[in-house]
Image (tube, rainbow, N blue to C red):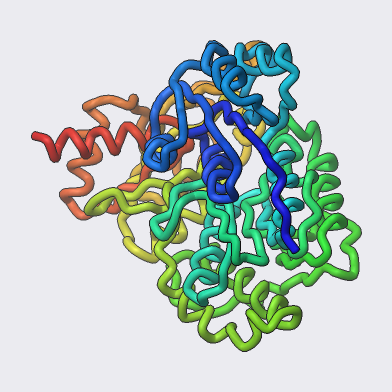
Length: 433
């Protein structure tokens, strides 16, 4: 029998890609929630529309008023929140339990007695999580879930009281994924990242080793999980030739879809809910509409992608090459500290782009002791350097993009910074004009 603990939760940064879906989920699950953010967003508007109290005041005054009205049990915040943030300081002064998002999610999973299906890996987590959600929804299987992106087929976070399973994009940043003991884990690929959390490749690999050990069952690619030395007997390691031939653009998308199908095959051995559902699942996956910022179509010949790592760039360009043989790439590097880590990997990953327009690095959570690497330095080892032009995020660049689109080139905007919002604003201005 499921039980429910009474919780009043305050979310700081309630519109964020990690916190927002968790807030949606908590609201669905019957907990009292409220929160704050610096500005509005689609996620915030969704919560406001559901009657959730959200303030764009992070001085702590709203937090105090909420606590006085009804004592807050949890103050939940993102890892990006500085330790001296006013709301975090006041929450501690008021004696409120403070926690990052995954600690709360663990409590909710235990409270609702949900089996966790965790999707992890360096790249492809969001897409694979979206694929799993899309497939189970269309199979008619009740699920609860949280995904770190907008999706067209539901909210980013959802709790269904009829569900037995919880689908979760389980991120390795800040060692988040080690809070969980998954019923089933899918690993897309292991490729060193997040040096601010993991000082070395060995530390990163060990974290995945620990995560796999904590999982009752794991499914991943031999090539993807070969970095982990000791795989427990409960690991199902797939060979490259096991990839399913499915009508999806992009080799990485077909590999991600294969993981989902293998997960359903495994779950079919454990539960009648999934028995005999593989063929139907393959047909459903062929119609997967994608997730926000993952090769998302913004307009005619214009696509946006969150990718900002050489592996992601190469995979997305391969996908784009199945759509067009003339690709104009506009790339915004993300975070200077990260550029220091990957500068030597900017070699052949851009070769499928006919034209490359390189923006200055988007700076966030930086180490002030590091010199900001110039675009000329970042591109110095590229095999097709002659295709590169250095640009700024301005009207001149939009003119370049417009001209490329008109001549039939597929324009791909890549980066996790401001490039996506900038393009959407430009498109909105065109519509108004």
